[in-house]
Length: 95
Ligand SMILES: [Zn+2]
Image (tube, rainbow, N blue to C red; front, side):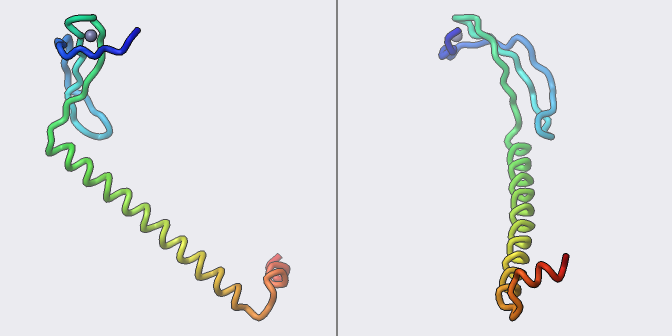
C-alpha cells in the first residue's frame, strides 16, 4: 500500500493515553480519500516542554557521570605512567 499523502482525514477514535510518561490524546484517523488509517498522539505544549526539559536533565546527569569516570581513569593511567616500577611488575604484584 502506498503512503497516504492526502490532507483530509477524519477522527474515528479518540482517547486519553500515556506515552513516555506523558498524558496524551491518542487519535485514530482515516483518510477521507483513500481510507488509510493511522494513529496520532496529541500532547499539550506545556507538557511537551516539561518532558523535554527533564529528558535534557537526565542526559546531562549521564554525561556528568561518564565525564567523572573518564577523569578518574585518566588520573589512574597518569599515576601508573609516572610510577618508577614498570606496569608489568605492578600487574604481577597484584595477582
Ligand atoms: Zn489518503
